[in-house]
Image (cartoon, rainbow, N blue to C red; front, top):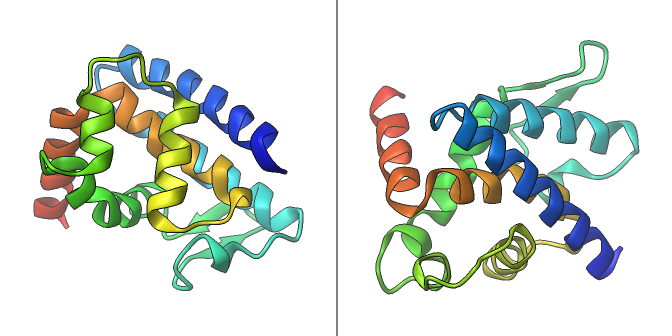
Length: 150
């Protein structure tokens, strides 16, 4: 696993962030990718509970997650909200620093912040993609809208 897995996840984050930008800020590509990755994790026998709250189930017969990708995104957005949306947060500072942030560097920071195993890097990729694709302000507004619609 290790750095190679994080770099691979970083490349995926960069690709999905482009899809988010092309779709005018829609997170549908992120939701689909989250579901696809969780189904793949479960098919490979990985313990999804290490990287997701236990309330999520993976239905292998129908290749989907219960709840859906949007709910998974909201769960991670809730956890990352303060560190990303407050000006003193380390993720906020990294993304707003003006430097060229990559999917890989953002995934590494999220893994460290959430104390997740490197094996969850691929699952974090769509979350990082939404931050890269929307930008901090839009991500935080999107999260606020999702909270109001719940």
